[in-house]
Length: 120
Image 1 (cartoon, rainbow, N blue to C red):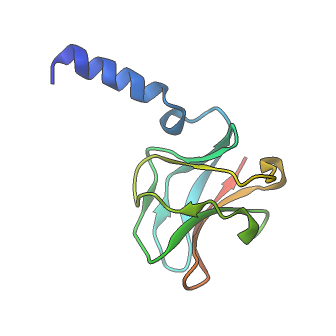
Image 2 (image 1 turned 120 degrees about the vertical axis):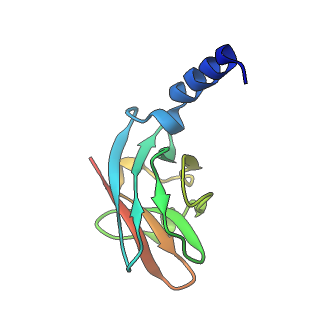
């Protein structure tokens, strides 16, 4: 890759909302149920974004959801796209993000939390 191409690619990635953060409410993950989950979650523009620093040690059936002082299954946004790095999830229709203060990584198969990020 040429230097100019590399610099242009890096600038485009840095401008990406899923990687940049700072556009919405942010929170830092802590692990749960013996799992290591860390990095940053953001709610912005009708989406939950897991930022580039997101890391999860893996588990069966991890899903992304919201909660208000606890997991809310009505907010389930689908499977975790990857155990590390940036990813983005659309909020379900009718869900008002202002009603929630947490982003959850939830193991639906075993009905246990894997990580939670409390939002500011």
